[in-house]
Length: 418
Length: 163
Image (tube, rainbow over all chains, first blue to last red; front, side, top):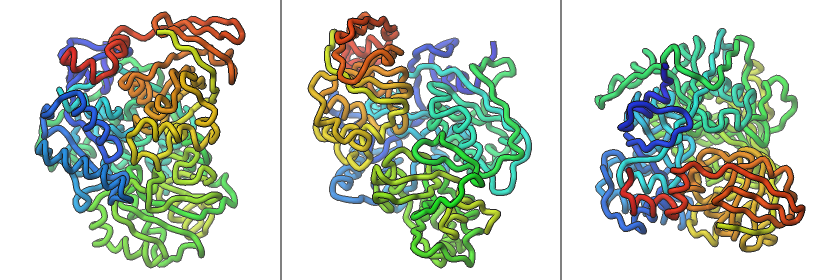
């Protein structure tokens, strides 16, 4: 019987002849990732268990990005634990703030994750790399500690769900809308323990940044992975990288637990309302939702095309009086591109702030915490109770175009209205 | 292993931000994390919870982030086990890896806030001592049982050297 991409990549990283959904396996990973929140526990566990040397220093990536640049003394200590461990173990792929970025934008940008890889990360949005035809998945700190020892991780082989998108996308509709629409349809546990596979003619035309936004939020439906079959668009993205890669395709007779097929021709920009990413409505159904803060950025939508589309809408405009606009590019490279292209100037002239890369506001860490009663529209990935600050604040999620348009009017707004 | 405790009941989709807010992730100390467990959705929870108590919840418990601080906070505030209809995948593996006992069961519909229950982790039997009802659940698969018996992933790897 045929295999899905997820099954093929997992199998290729074991010493087994065959694997099947539901089976527990041990597999060797290509990259193991940790950040300033999760890696300190992993490092502590690794040392507590009596180990002193990591299995392969070239396969470990450490990115202080959540509370970095350090927001306070305690987060400075956490970042320092990563820096010290990287130095002690001679881990090359440790990224200080001047060369960092939000991990899930940074790793693909640097070619540290490539098609066919098996990647684990102690961060739930590690599923982002599925956009490149990688099997990547979020794990915990202890899993990361164990991978430091022997490069391995235990997996329960997931069944796969296929999502086929047909038709032609409207203007202002992209990867973020497709994934919000999907989560709205299947719910926050609609793909629990499953590998999601995004395909169909709409996906084939989607650029890499939109694909990353889709795969990024697979976890918001409970998915272990959000995989897109690599094609010419993928090939172009990874062509400059030298490390060995492999383009897997699902077999025509591969077995799926479910297949969803949608014509998305009439889809309008989607907005997830408080307090779940599945509470999704088309933007035109949201009338008079006043917004105090707009946040554009994150591992979901902080890439250059996200900033370009936002700047296009905000050019020569002013944001609504009293509104706070925070734009944070996902990496230093994107930051520099945004400066060179004049995008940073557009954001600042519109009345927004242009921040250094950080996960900060997305998880209520720093750089834009919400107080009681405040409403944010964010291009981030979660809108749980208290996600961006006070448990009495409200977070809506959208694509960057809706976020930029809403910053101008001060209410959740369809970009066509600008 | 038999665990017995008072029930604290929660609904569906209890996420890791509910269990422990990101602002507390500057700590790795179980006691400190435990003192903020469920703070955003149930501010009185840590005042009410006693050592050995059991959390009962609906579907998709622990969805959201990969933060291992979530099961650590639950353990840190004294909770002995979690029973839910289903668990999010990363929370599931984190709980296994750090040795927080849990069971998957639809029996949660028949267990109420404040009930005293007893669970046998080996047999998967849940007894509601308040209502005198018993429920059979499926125990863990062999591989996971091995991890739990060894006292978590790092102890297992130390002993077996992996596979």
